[in-house]
Length: 189
Image (cartoon, rainbow, N blue to C red; front, side, top):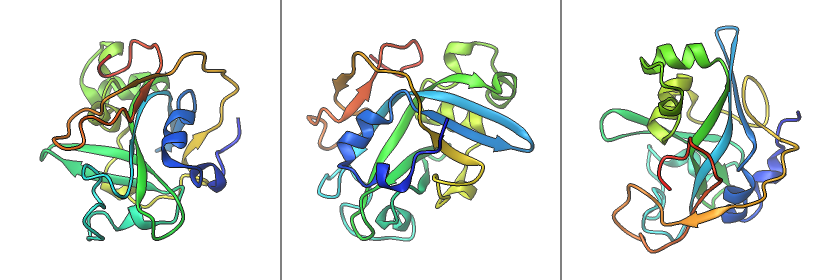
């Protein structure tokens, strides 16, 4: 499988959110590979009040302002990290939240990191996913188009994509910008 190139992330953000479904999040950490098929995403656009960048650039969100194809990792609720893929040209702050993956490789490591044996509970939400993979603020700004923390293309043809309101936000809750496939690893159907 090939690493997704930067031009993939320069497409319209909601298209990227849909097209990331079925792609593979791949992370080589301490010589071990952890990977998972992306099964749920959410889009965040620049004029969206739920987007971290809607009020301008801050120290926390500056990665969202470009370049595309980089990881935007932030800490939320005082306990969880969330992973986003930055989209759009520099200066246009948009991103796609990776909400859930289906674990493929490194499952035993994920189980240790999450302190659970239950496979379905490993990566079925953005905080669970980052905890399972060991993703934290150190990866904020990482280029997802090269290196040991990337998103790989997949030959899998996605037959049905579901749309729903985003989760865990208080504004713009009417937007159907959450996308998912039929998988037991989706955080909420």
